[in-house]
Image 1: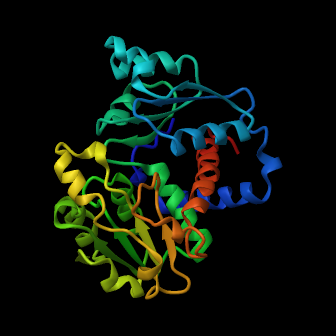
Image 2 (image 1 turned 45 degrees about the horizontal axis):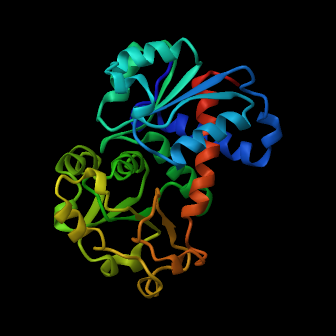
Length: 304
């Protein structure tokens, strides 16, 4: 039985296979419409989510399966004091696979040690979000036609942004990758990410607080929101939340084939005037997320 807790749980070859299957699902959806008939996915979301939860549910339904679960801890027995381990053991008796989001780092790993069915980490605190990373890799593969020789700008909250940490980890496996890390001083990329991933793999990177300085070098610009829920001090959040706003003016210097990505939800870090720009890929990214999760569910359930 396989679990997916961290993007590193998947080999480069397995990621390539998932991308290949996802692309086939996009082309031939009817071929997959009953692959998960009589199977049940449990979505255990101890933290609110729109895209991730609904895309998992849509993915399972389009595979012909069923969905059970809850969308906040207040609507589960956790509110009565039940442990995560007990919840997982209980839900495993009703389902074939579990997608779990939790505000505490490491909770899905703890759950996986007690579960009798496969666990997919759908985000744990500021730590990991492997299915968002798979979504990002499929987006890059479809939009740029490659996963190597890319200059990737990561902008916004690089300290608490779990999507950023997972994407850096995943893309560091590919050749010719360079990162431009764009953030205010208070939200810089954690030292362990720079030391254990970037420096260890000899990945070139630049740190800056100026989005316009390097925008003309970028193949991909990955915007992130400043996450209010990760701040202990509201004053700090209010001071930093509008630090970067991508608009048409800033994009004048960018490449014609720049791919603008965002894990969403967006607050105001990308102006709505950018939405009609052909380089805006963040709503396509949402659709890609469903297809890669369909491919992942099939893999985890060992369905050919």
